[in-house]
Image (cartoon, one colour):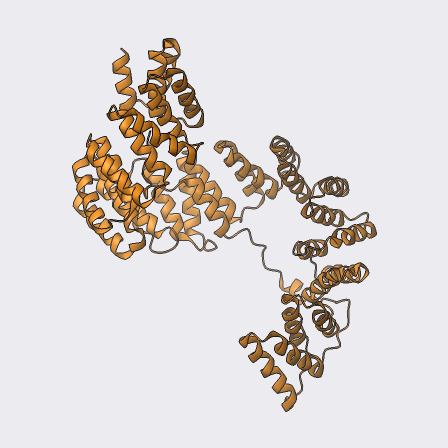
Length: 580
């Protein structure tokens, strides 16, 4: 069977969810109390930095300005020397840090070390300075110095109430030096009763693909702090990296049950989403939200899954909560999903109203497309056409896809001649767009206009000769509606070579072999296609071949199952009528 054209219909809810996850605000910690903010932090190291002289003497001012100008010019060595001179004269940590980073980026470890030493001297409690000093020491193969800097990072982080071992492992993740593993092992031995130290060693071991060592460190970390969720998540990651997907899933499920932290519940929920176990995923996200009620990202995921599971009450309350929340800065997206909720329930007028409330943001174009489509479905085709025209003018980069979407709408509304006229207009405007030619070819094939279909498919192949979908569509059309089976087989064979895992192309190969009376091979390909995709057209082909080859009981069972799933499918109805 040919692959349907791509058009701008409802985006996948889960695709939007995954996109949304990268953009939704996560849970935020409440602001510190005034008492906490006023508490003085006692830092472990004393700075030797001096306040800048006022006024700046000419030499110092010259070095500052010359350094900055050289940076802008890309003359890094000149910039480095001026900034280093300014840093020394003014005891300025900022100038030293700029010089250090310039040399580091150029992999000049001699200059970098010189500047970093000044930076650490002038601002010894700066975590970035200490991290770069540690990485430079590793680059210079000085593990003792790297270890000293790591110890300083831990002291500073402790004073600032930060996770020093996490800061260490994050910095070490940027290093390619093999000696970092030796350093973190030595550091972990210095802190044998600290779960975070063992976890940091596990992280670095994982980066170096030393999985046995990483798992040993994780085990020790979990013994020291059984309720901490991060080691469980890292163990799951290691199992997955080693190809043990079943082990990873089992561990994550058990960890989420035994230690239901928001992170573990969310991770397990995402895994269940990938497995299309949407109801179970929803339950895990709801449990996570109960532990962190202000987490907007979790609420967002619950809203998506409520739509996926058709829990309309939950979807409505969730998206309205996000829409009205002062902490959620994407009310426009909430309006979009409220529109989807109404559309999926068949409330097209309310859906259109909700989509029209989207005025900006990443879903604006999708909302406008949905508005145009639903306007047409509500019977206002002229108004819908004007909306589509306006979208083509305001978003010319999407004009081709908008033409295809409008034509698909007309086809769905049983107006194929109008769809064909629209494709003619589009191709006159964009004669070199292979997608338009492919789409019109599919419509022409459906209408029995074989000459036009063949002409369009071949024109599309002249533009994109190795497009597997077009090769398949041409081959299938010739196999299904002509007796030019040898030509059809050649096109489908080439398509299958280009995309051997495509269910649509496997189906076409099975169908052309059936037409060539190669029944054994036909069944082989059709069964493969059916295994890969639950599709009524593939099922119809397989049923017909099974019936013709004498496997009538299996054919009838498959027909009954497909008919109950797709009661309105034309292909299945045709097969059912022929076999009666």
